[in-house]
Length: 137
Image 1 (spheres, rainbow, N blue to C red):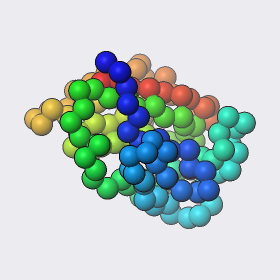
Image 2: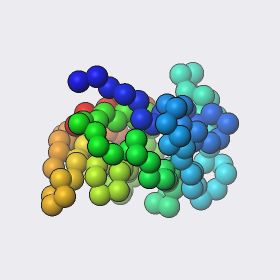
Image 3: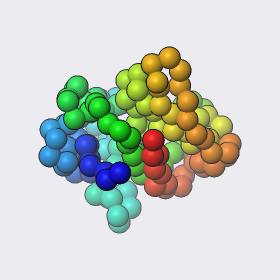
């Protein structure tokens, strides 16, 4: 199966403009403007500090966001100390890619009646370290 990019964000200029050409632009909700981090590491122009449950990026429904035969999600992140689930990417009632409070990285999908997926061992994700993670469903 070939992969088509559906959504791609770099967060340059403090926005979630979709660089895939599918107009899946995101609405960024953060508790304060200082959650934008410019040049966190040489490879990244901008990052977002998601340190509150209300921090999120919302994408409006679009025909390109449904009907897939499969999908791949990639995320680059560095968690601070956490005692709650950290959602990396989640599709409303369809899929989720997240870190559990015990440091397990999980990728799940919803088939309309139950959630299923894969997960790493507890303690895989540690605080203060950058990760590039991918889930393929």
